Image 1 (spheres, helix red, strand yellow):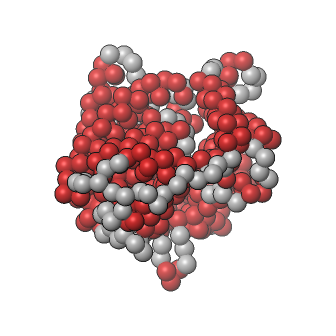
Image 2 (cartoon, rainbow, N blue to C red):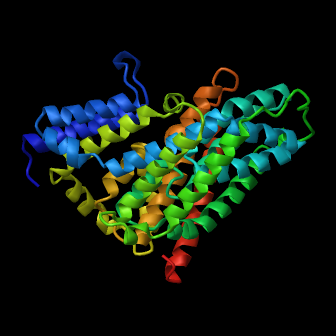
Image 3 (cartoon, rainbow, N blue to C red):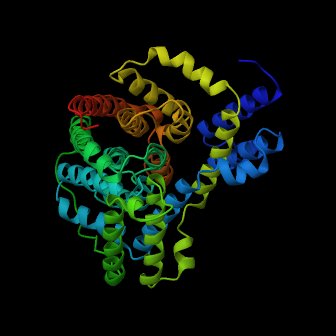
Length: 421
């Protein structure tokens, strides 16, 4: 490839954006992930690499943004109705002993993250779980790590479980039902592995019993919860049904955001809370992060850099996909999983490779503290009362990531050989 100003400038902006995203926050620049991504997108336009019209219309994948927004609104109404607070408190009351609490926490965090975005589960569960285990005089570290690792793992099972899966759904066109059936055994097996590994690692902290007499189930708005759950059931049916065959002008990749936005509108109409209250709980920063990142990747796509990178890496990839899994785990921890999926979309072809990338990029989030946004949420919310350092987390993150990625690859490869994916 030849180097000219657009190629050199786009590579510089691309690299700087990814460094800032990976570092999470630089104090003297007052930048975080969303603002760093937005700054990169603005530079791509200001330097003439991506024309403004293209940035506004073609570069940003509005289907992904719409899907995220729709799911966030639905989750916001459940949050206002105190559904997640009720579930987490119920788990603590029913556990009885530390071992059972670990198991229930892994199961609940994993299953709820499959239905809702994993980051949301971590935001809502962390304060309640942390407060309860500290009152019971338990070491909070095993439970916080169980919460976040299970949230990451469980989210792999659906196209709406985490942001990178949403991208996979939009880019690949894999149906919601097929993705769920293929990734269900991967998620279920990996949750069991997560529980088993954490139980062994923290065996000394899981003995005895604890006192939850001070805990009470919160009062919830049952009518709102029932209505939102009914809407969610209809949304799931919409995800599963081939609506694109019956609706003119709707493609397979556009069905997911359309159903999510329709579900959000139904929840607003039925949920009793004012829309402004729900919109306050929408993660607008995450939406800005995606918009900026789309423009940055569009800028680098206009050069021959990415095809050249793929040409260098392609000879290393094997037919089974093992090297692709390892490469995905490594790169997801260097530049984070969402940016990696955006960059890799030009390299991936076929449902099997897409499911491998979805699995490996999701499980890669458990390797280090900075592996996923969910990790940072839990650690940030608990830092004043339960500090978890890099090595303390890595002690659990490494075996969990290795075991679940290996199991996930084995299951997907077997299904691939059987013709299921």
